[in-house]
Image (cartoon, rainbow, N blue to C red):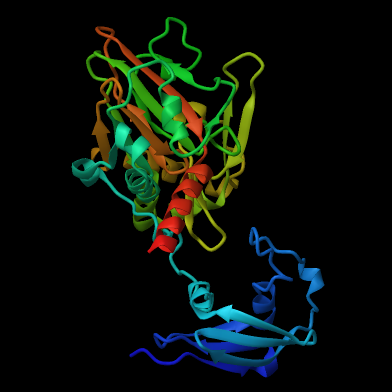
Length: 383
Ligand code: FE2
């Protein structure tokens, strides 16, 4: 039952306990509250940026008094004798007094892992709608954040059209492969991606640090036999490995693999990162998997190397399991985007008959998420 919010000073002023109107009680430290004050001496009213450093706040800051009043919390801090109002809704949304997640490899609620069952519901948007209707773009970006990939149909069939996809949410990330790269059969390929061979599902360029976080592949011609694209959720693969072999999962998260690419003159890219990356609190944040650019692994203790390799092999088997695949064949003017920190992509082999021409480029996930978050904020404010 909804109640009037209440506040109690606890631990001799080192903290408060707030009971919100829904009945939930959360504690907040004096130093945290003071650092997160929104008065115009602490935060710029214009851009919201903090105007002080932690060093400007006395180390012995405590709460002299606290009360709730008309939806706000009023706190007076000692020794500054500074009174600051807080929005209770903001405080409730930023409460940190909760148990730590226990599962290693947990996912943020914005993300949902998937397998081949998503074939019946591939996230997809129409190019014209995405360009002209903000709500369509917001829904598509929301799906990309949730599932880590999305298709776009109905785009123009013209050289460089992929840049228009990147411009929907951000900017192209240029690399040594250029601002974009061509994906079609070459006689002397500088990279296996440019042949007709099938490729095992992989994340791109794990030898970069940071990796390109978004990849766009745009189809301009596709009359060859085969050559379907497929995507696999690296997060679901990691979860499966964890559930069937916790020690193997642990080894792939706790030790760095190494990746390298030195296939072109003047290029020698190297990285040292785990295949499955967790945040310090166990959140699953990234997967790197690419057989072609895996370098010698030298950061696993001798005693663990055999088990590490068994886990690496098993992760590959899970990734190759057809029950994990979402598959689609792109027609000219169609494209797809992957979150390259999470979703692996692959291509089935294709024959020399007909032609297959895709253009690819990289972009940045932070820009994509920023565009989406700004749209969501705008919608919230308008509501
Ligand atoms: Fe690739």
